[in-house]
Structure formats: C-alpha cells, structure tokens
Image 1 (cartoon, rainbow, N blue to C red):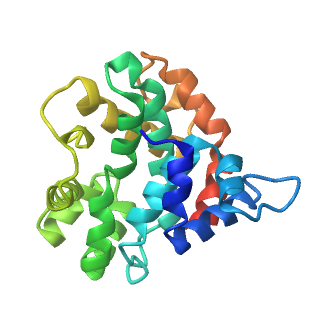
Image 2 (tube, rainbow, N blue to C red; image 1 turned 90 degrees about the vertical axis):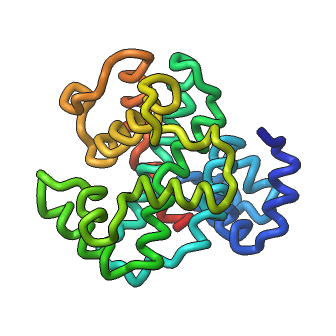
Length: 232
C-alpha cells in the first residue's frame, strides 16, 4: 500500500530493477508512442498495479539463479504468477480479502520453487521433468520424492526465514475460506489461462466473478507474455 512517488524513489535505488522497468515501458507490451527514458515516466506508463507487481517479482526473482535447472520454465513461472496475482486482486473483495494483499500473496505463493531450483537444481530438474511427463504426478509430489519437501513447504520456510507478514501466507492452511481458498483457486485458473484453455473447458468455478476475471486475463495473455519476456 504505497504511493507511486515512493515506489519511484525506491526503484531509483535499484539500478537493475529500474533498467527492467524502463525496458518494459519501451517493450511491445507497452507500445509507447515515443521512447520512455526516465523512471517516473516508465512507472507512469506501466501503471501503479503493474509497477507494484513487477517490482516485487524482480526484487524476489533476482535473489535466485534458476539457469542451472533446464526444466524450470521462467516464462511460465512468472506469467502464471502475474496472472494469478491479477486474478487474486480482482476476486478478493467477493471472498472477504483485501485486494492488494491478495495480489502480493498470489505473486509470492510459489517462491519456494525458485529457491529449490537455485539450491537443488538437479533434483528440481528431475522433478519438473517427471511432472511434465506424467498426468498422475504433481510438481509437489515429485519434489517430495527427490528433495524431501514440496514447493509449498519450501515457500513456507522462506516466508518464516524472511519474517514476511502472516497475511501473505494464504493457501497453505486448513481454512477453506478467504485467502486460503482464493490463492490456490487463482493459481489453478492461471495455469489454465497460460495453456489458453477456454473457461468452459477449464473446470474452474463460476462464482464470485470468476468467468469475467478469467476471460479478461485470457484476452491479455499475449501482453502478459510480452511483459514477462521484457522483465525476466
């Protein structure tokens, strides 16, 4: 919950994030009429919600190196994370959750996978390959057998180590309401959207405005891919 002016000041303190945002403002996703050459103009061009989301993603993402894990698909990871965060913000009010907190919670929900791909690249590569080849095995099941714990457990460990607020841990508890229900639902929808599955074939619930939110993100998929390519 931060103003654009404060975000600009913070971005200016991180040259790598600033460069990525300026690049994004000049990308096909943004399609500016004239070149964007300043950080305030880049942030204004991208918009507050995009800047919030991408700045958090960049700050987290640059902490990990996933290049040694060939099966890790950075485009898919960040596209689905961004889509999930957009969905969470859209659907949060109907589920009794705060939109911007839900946006951040969805964006960071799977950061444990980034950490595992950085610290255990061979094991994660094997897990992702097995999960991609089998319809019976999920990524978390494969990670448990090769790494000893799931991506959810890895994310929880990072959240505790970094002392992140409890409000951002939606989706890992036993509660079936609020954020604990919202974040996994948005993650499932984001996966379907990334694979360009029409809503009527997605198997996603139709309540709480899900259809409109799903179809809006599906229409924006190409732009989100362009944004992810420019950023990551």
